[in-house]
Amino acid sequence: MVYELNHELAQSFEKRFGYEPAKLYFSPGRVNLIGEHTDYNGGHVFPAAISVGTYGAIAPRDDQEIRTYSANFPEAGIQLIALDDIALRQYDTWIKYLRGVITEMAKFGYPVTKGFDLAIVGDMPTASGLSSSASLEMLLINMLADLMGYENDKLTIVKMGQAVENDYLGLKTGIMDQFAVAFGEDEQAIFLDTNTLEYEMVPAEFGEYRLLVMTTNKKRELVDSKYNERRAETEAALALLQESVDIQTLGDLTTDQFLAASASLTADNEVIMRRARHAVTENQRTVEAKAALQDHDLETFGQLLTASHNSLRDDYEVTGVELDTLVDAALAQTGVLGARMTGAGFGGSAIALVEEARVPEITAAVGEVYTNKIGYQPSFFVAEIVAGTHEIK
Ligand code: GAF
Image 1 (spheres, helix red, strand yellow):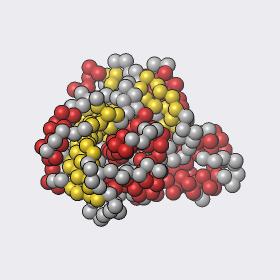
Image 2 (cartoon, rainbow, N blue to C red; image 1 turned 120 degrees about the horizontal axis):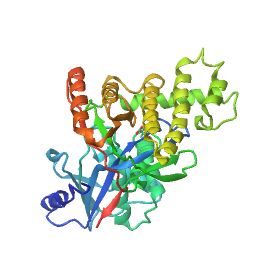
Image 3 (cartoon, helix red, strand yellow; image 1 turned 60 degrees about the vertical axis):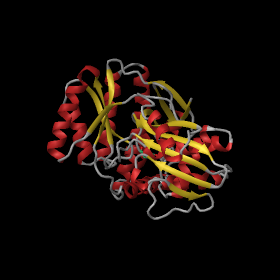
Image 4 (spheres, rainbow, N blue to C red; image 1 turned 120 degrees about the vertical axis):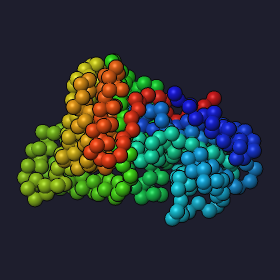
């Protein structure tokens, strides 16, 4: 399953550039099991790297030129970039990530000074909310760090990827996606405290159940501005709460402490306090879900996934009719222990913990309900949890 496009990419490189690539890499996407919109609120997250992602083939050049080709945009052909001209262009497609990566690597003391030929291909559904950008960022940074002979320190690479989002592209994302893509391990979920960056690998053992990824196929609209808006709302709530409690982040509060501290503030600040309530309760659910998974208590784990979705729908308001339809339709089926949106929301994908033997029936039933209500089809696959970004030897 993993490396499905590996061979094809090597051929595609050779066809475009006339010689074999020096190195091939794979960079996964991610699902987040639970812990949504907590990573910029000092909470816990619980993601895992998955087998759909981005492949890269690269070879060094003797000059300062960069020639690139994406098999996902064949009509663009080979695009040329010069190392000394990497400012963001208005009509940049995926190339903006390459320019961003080169810019941020230089700022982190990892300047890219050699030219190279590069081909990439990805097999993630578009706008799937499975972190295609973090997958690409981690791929490019790993390849270019190796090309230059720099030490491949995972956490630094993760932070460079986050800087591409935050500083180069202006999206105020947290650290979860890059961390999951870089630190993933086969069949392990990553329980990460985004406050301390301490993490623990937890076997993603689902027994007779599988993680079904259900993609809305909704066109990506306004996700970035709404994401930044949610972040501003929780920051405003934190500032208000800090007037009465001594906390650094919302992740410092238990649900009970939050309810006590927010009681007198809620009437005048209804919306931002609901946002904060999600961040606090979601953090608690994430800690409980990790314990449930370790105890092989899949019933409880599933219930926490569903509770997470409800909080994202009602308090954080980041789901929307497409994600709600997928989740509700999945939960109405026999053999489903829980379901929730995964990632930023507003479209993208949901996950459901489903009985393996019933996957075909469940996807057929959910697909029918969704298509009738939304007017186009969703897509489905069973997640395979794999290792983080690496060279394919
Ligand atoms: C996006 C962001 F990139 C992550 O940092 C995280 O905040 C997530 O949305 C929501 O949990 O994927």
